[in-house]
Amino acid sequence: MQIFELSLQLVSDTMPLVRRISRVDRDLARQLRRSVMSVPQRMAEGMHSRGGNKTAQFQGAAASAKETEASLRVAVAAGYVGASDIAALRDRCDHVSAVMFKLVRRPR
Image (cartoon, rainbow, N blue to C red; front, top):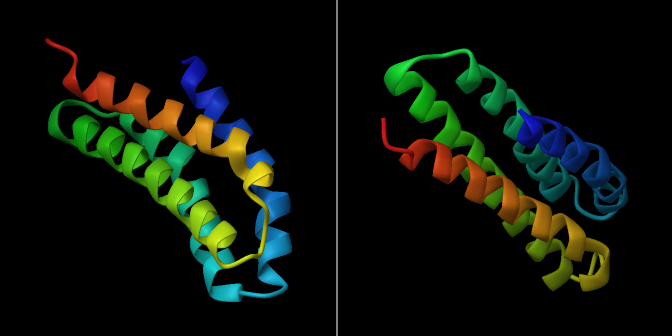
């Protein structure tokens, strides 16, 4: 599943910003770290689940990607990072969320 690899890259690319944000706001950094790491974890659990649990895990992965995007936007609004620092990450979060949503909505 290529989207899983993309979610791992999202984690990898977000961590330098997590470290940067933690210097000024440990709570936001902690929340960002938890949400971004939750994306591939929930995705992996969903890939190896069936029925309702699969759906719930994929929805959770999509929600965590959106939470990650929101946390990044909060960091920009607070002045911790610049909008250009998060542009590619926001796109990746949106892509991961969209794919997870499509997997949940796919007809059986």
